[in-house]
Length: 304
Image 1 (tube, rainbow, N blue to C red):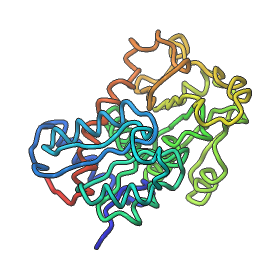
Image 2 (image 1 turned 180 degrees about the vertical axis):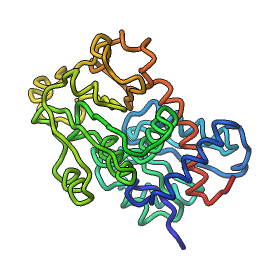
Image 3 (image 1 turned 45 degrees about the vertical axis):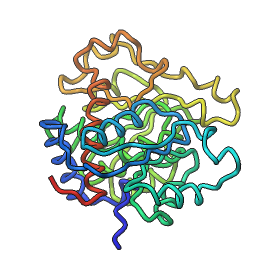
Image 4 (image 1 turned 90 degrees about the horizontal axis):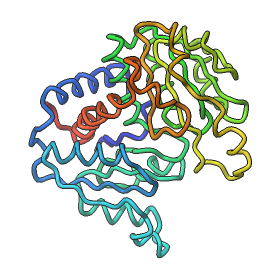
């Protein structure tokens, strides 16, 4: 039987991505559709989440499914030593779909290989976050009118930021130019730069977050420096406030510029940016509902 799990966006062709975006567009027009009546969806969140969990659960509910799951592994048998394998094998007996976030890279891949039902990767450590990528793509498409030939600037934690890793892979179909802005400690991992090199995708690395770089961008993708990924808190303290976007820095930016952020933010976007019409991160989060409705239907083989 075909494994319809969504583990990484790299497994999706350009055509599949565009199809999902069209589905998201239809769900935005009419989000309440009881096409999953009788289905049960499990949300297994071994790591904290606000937007991803709530938008997936809202998506499932608006589609008519019932939702079970947990948000704290301490209240499950994993606190007693139950393995991920046993948890997945057990939960897959009860449900039609598992949506999982886990702190270990590769956990979603492993789960998809042993589960009898599809797995949606809601984030596996610093590796991939494909559903976030779909809502990012939908947000970019809505604000730019295209995905082709865009200048995308990524700022902040590019080492551990799974959202930027997934976005690079997805945008590779659409002839982007990337600018990577990060301190040396958090620079883009070599594997993603090699990925770009192999596909002849231009990218430029910067340590300074300047207005000159901002003014070139169509999309400015800000990220949080993730304290939870650091084993040495002294290293975190050195870089935690390395970049902050302020409203005055946008004065000469392109009219079509939109600022995205996977959220939550800490200090990397000043609150004075929120009222700027180029700030799109809250609308971006709303788009997550429609993108995740599309993903759920796709992995369950349901057409709309």
